[in-house]
Length: 322
Image (cartoon, rainbow, N blue to C red; front, top):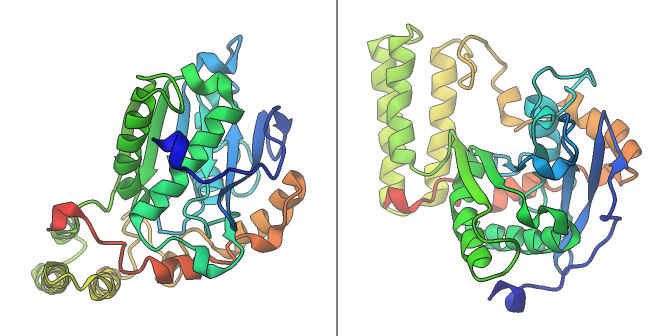
């Protein structure tokens, strides 16, 4: 059982009370030692909805992609948090409606860090074990959420993590651990890396019907897709990821630098390799956010390239690809 087998969890920063952090509303943040020498950062935003208690609204757990993307930065300031990357209020932000928990996972992403890189996870199973350790501590430290509906939202590599995490959470809850059984209500996976075969074969079609490439472009993209799928079939997972990155570059070259996450815009291909760690966001997190939260800004993104390197082969591994 999880309560018997998980590593000892150590609290490094205050957990118990909501505080004023960065931006509007009450917040809580800190580190959890998910393993000895492995420190996972979280940032909880209590809903600003007009309710008597924040526990009247669900808790949303946000898992970022990459692997190595920072939930506390990219998910928070670029996508759905109460303020944007320039510090301006975001209309329609999620915190207006629900409590949002950002976790920098895996360790080495965002503000999460390991004492040395040998402690970074090497596969999805280890990553999920760390998240389970974190959730065990979260529910012990925030007992009021044990009866609050939980929804998991994720994107990209996070969409690969979320279903497996949800299965383990559900089993633990049904066994009387973590929180009340039945509070896990949904799992949402956005552009998830759970079936490379299906994902790859749709891109050329989409670009073609939107007039972004011609038939020759379709043939070139499809030929590169076959290289990815062949490597996966042969269990050459690092090679598959290399071919995927080449496939990505081909699409951007053929479309004149189209941004594949929003084909109405263009982007410098080199910027699309930052996984959200662009200079503007980096400065925000390393200087302003770290000062407001009183944490070490130097650790932010300091190990992200190690995360990407170690999980390079794991990125495209999926049971569906078998």
